[in-house]
Amino acid sequence: MNWYVAKIVFRIVSGNGNHHAQFDEQLRLISADDEHQAFEKASRIGLNNQDSFLNNQSEQVKWQFIDVAQINQLNDLSNGTELYYQIHEAPDADLYIAWAHHKSALLGIKN
Image 1 (cartoon, helix red, strand yellow):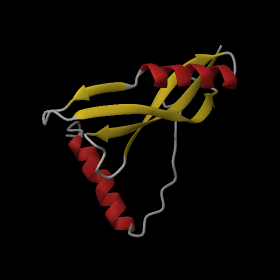
Image 2 (cartoon, rainbow, N blue to C red; image 1 turned 60 degrees about the vertical axis):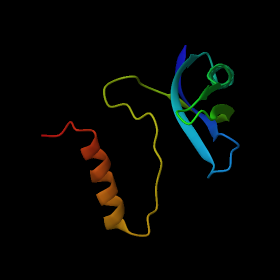
Image 3 (cartoon, rainbow, N blue to C red; image 1 turned 45 degrees about the vertical axis):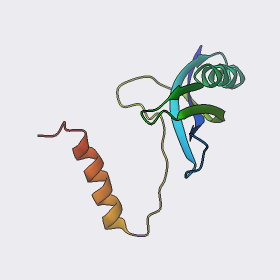
Image 4 (cartoon, one colour; image 1 turned 180 degrees about the horizontal axis):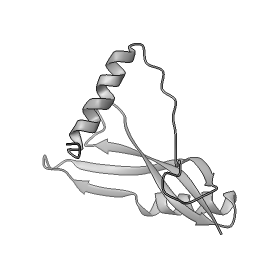
């Protein structure tokens, strides 16, 4: 068995959908014999996690499975193993760094 990280993409539609498109990208750990089986398992997870419910304004909210956008095999499962990365180009480096520090502060874990 091998371990994979799968990126599963859902679209979130509230009410009649008259809003900016929203997508939820989830990274899921998958155990599979090969990449094809990992893709199939991730697709089943996506399909099984579609949902529909009423929000606090009594509008229907739908989480629609779109697809499995990425499969990456993990070579090692140990402390600090890289699961995913994304290179981000920012027009303002200082603004991006401030955003990263802000997100970290929201975790409320630092001293």
